[in-house]
Length: 521
Image 1 (cartoon, one colour):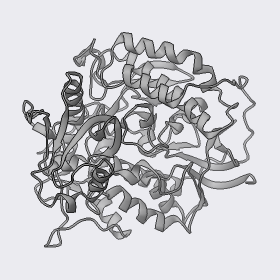
Image 2 (cartoon, rainbow, N blue to C red; image 1 turned 180 degrees about the vertical axis):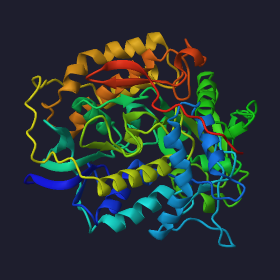
Image 3 (cartoon, rainbow, N blue to C red; image 1 turned 135 degrees about the horizontal axis):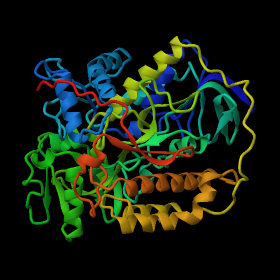
Image 4 (cartoon, rainbow, N blue to C red; image 1 turned 120 degrees about the horizontal axis):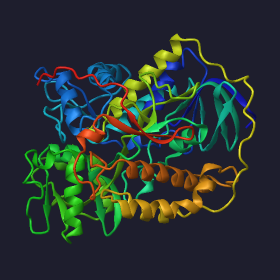
């Protein structure tokens, strides 16, 4: 591919990137770059649906309160208010774009219940295939209106004397006025994950190498119920299944979550740790779905995975284990997706807007991607764009480092053992020592000769950031649990976050917004 120049280049083809492309395509010259194909993303796997306070008995302030509670009040409150207020309008917008949400016999939207929600407020499409339905609709809208570069790996962000001016790929250089990272998360750092194989933290690594600031990297959410049989993962079991009455039991039929006031719909971090502790005791944990009427009709995607795992769908007692699911932290952004680097934006899971706090509330992820896609698209349409396309490229920095990074399997095994759901000083220090020999090659990976090798170097760098942030936060909060500091430290850490960048190193900083609003249930 010859070098190209566009107005906006978007890296990633999940819901956040696709919606941004759709909203910009009639105004600017847009290119989407994805390292696989446009339909392959974590968004396309999303089953549970999208949260929105639509029911007359529900309210945005209740949605806000539930999100605060699940995320341990570690939020950017202004951004969260924007998220929940915008949610019902996002549902209407998606319907206008051709997404057909599930409705009851009276034509009303079906509203599902999921963990830590106080109301039924989850909209679904095609049962448990909401992400696929929304993604497919957006692909249809953009495929003839933007340039699409598939099977293309972004290797570096182009740094100029004015900011970020595009990307360098394995097929050539793309200069751009605005560069948007929409690359998703990093679930592949762990042995069991709900994420697609492409989720190796590429955008997080690209941003760090370029000098952007990242925050809250220690908050990794583990979903309680991955379908795991004989050590093999067969994908996610949506929280909506528990919302319809399924419950967790051990091999003796004893209810696992009977002790909690919310039972099986407790927040994800609570349920995940309960399962993990039971598995360490030698118990087997199952999701008992036999109480759900019309199980196959309600969850067609799950039925396919049961068939793959050779589980009898007529007696659905499903073996489960927690798995890495979502990065609540990421590249720090403002409400318009702007990062600390001029010309660089981030949206979706790769970004940290602060709306998820320390532990994401179920079905807020698709919502975040769509709300902040609107935000960044509106901003880019209405303001004069930084133009780094003609800016002088920054002179080369330290020499490129060759050397073979560890295997993905080795990274996953060590991250799961030392930086997984239960952490302590010893394990985190062990992980840090294990990563040390590979860090120079991860920071300066220009000698990489293949996509697979670059992915491993990206994984090393992101693993290091998570480990360092987890070492600094000496408390337990949400997706970050330290067995040597098992309680929250409200005096030392309430409202504080861990920030990481090449400029400032690893620091503890105050949150950008501390406003609290009155809540109404």
